[in-house]
Length: 191
Ligand SMILES: [Fe+2]
Ligand SMILES: [Fe+2]
Image (tube, rainbow, N blue to C red):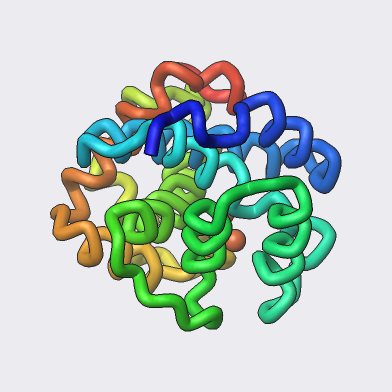
C-alpha cells in the first residue's frame, strides 16, 4: 500500500485533539508517534502508517478509559472517520484484553513502544535536568524494579514488548531514547 493511502497527519492530529484535552496524554501520543516512526524505519515498513498508529493509539482513552471500551469505542469513531482496518486493528491490539494476536511488526511495535516510551518519559521527567541524554538502560531498569515508581506502567507489558520484537531491553531503551531526541521540546524534555 502506498503511503498516500493513509489519512493525513493533520486529520489524525485533529481527531486526537477533539477527544483528548489532557496535555500529558497529547504528549504521550506525540512521543509514541515518534518511536513508532523510528520502528517503522527499522523494519523497512511504512513509516507514515506506523506514525498514525502511534499518534492515535490512545485517542479515545480520555473519553473511554475502561477496559472493554478503550480502543473499542475508538474503533467505531475511526471507522466513521475513514481510517483503514489495518490502523484500527493495530490500535486495538495494544490492549491485551482485546485478545488480538500480535502477528505483524506493526502490532508488535505499538505494544513495545507504548508502555516503555511512557516509562522512559517518566524517568526523564523526574531528573532535574529533564535530559534524555542522561537516561541510560541501567537507570531505566532500576526504576522498573522500583514498584512504587510510575505504578500505572505494567512491567509485564514492558518486558513482553521487547520480547515480542526480539530486541534486548537495553537496546530497546536506547532506541526509544534516540527516537525521542528530535521531539524532546514538544514533550517538555531536553536532549
Ligand atoms: Fe492504551
Ligand atoms: Fe499509550
